[in-house]
Amino acid sequence: MLLRHRSALLLPLTGFLLVFFVAPLVWLLSLAVREAEVPRALPRTLTALQSWHSGQPLPAPLFSGFAQDLADARAASTLADAARRLNYEVNGVRSTLMRAAREVSSAPAGTVFGSEFFSAVDPTLASPEFFAAVQRAKGPASSYYLLAAFDLARNASGEIERATEANRIYVDVLLRTLGISASVTLLCLLLGFPVAMLLTQVKERTADWLMILVLLPFWTSLLVRTAAWVVVLQREGMVNTVLMRLGVITEPLTLIYNRTGVLIAMTHVLLPFMILPLYSVLKGIAPHYMRAAASLGAPPVVAFFRVYLPMAAPAIAAGSVMVFILAMGYYITPALVGGGSDQMLSYFVATYTTDTGNWGLASALGLMMLVTTLALYSVAHKLSGGRALSMG
Image (cartoon, rainbow, N blue to C red; front, top):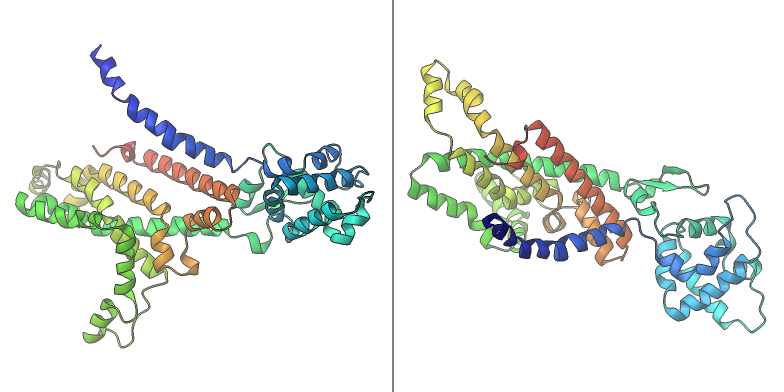
């Protein structure tokens, strides 16, 4: 009975997560495979294309239904979304479709809407390649956005092939994101491990003050912290000024709007997420283990790597996974202190959702990031013997 009442305490949190996290996330990720714009705007066109295959002549009733769809979609304000979707596959067709819809709506009664009419507007609208793209977007689901996220596309015959060179960017961006995240994780581990060890070896009062310094970045906005690095790392900033006055350098270093600035700023932001899990485990390692190793003749370095480090492995695994996953989704810091070649995958997700309105590709990139993160997490969990899930 008591266990049942305790379980009931989780219901509000579970309901909140389902309604405000799981459901929106599933809805967003479903946009990666959903096709609704073209079926909603061009139903008669898709009906005429049901039995048509690439390489065959276009069916005769196609263009009259296409013209009626354009007129109805323009009146219902659904054409713009369909035109934008088709423009992803047929470059420049968005403005052409909007112009064709105006021509159809203003055409005099009795006008015959055939291939000649649309060829006069733009030959693309009478081409098999255009209607093959329309057919591929017939819905209710397609692999277009998922293929695009992996630099793939379907050709006119429906076969999967590599995208054009201009569109092959996302795999490189994913590899760049993984590389930056791994570099930040390694830097955080190298900087955070000595700090966590120090916290376990000083007096409790001193450890409390040091912990305040570790947590201090949490009291400041991420945007403010990143903007501060822009001031500190610029050519006339504090770092270059100090180094030049000390005679270490003769010219200012380029520390911002490049990979160096991204690594410095992200390491600063994420360092507490490495120190806290490390400290929570290291404080539980009794000092007599190292003394016992020394009494058995082990030098300090050997005792550290053979005794201390294996006991700290759960904390290293937990901290590394936490920092890596957080780094994978970073957007503000690389956008402010990085250059064009340092933007991570989240930058493109944000761009497609806020600037271009390409929710399908944004969802596909988000899904690719999620799957990659889960796969790497699973590998880390397996390699750590299940210790990536726990710090104890």
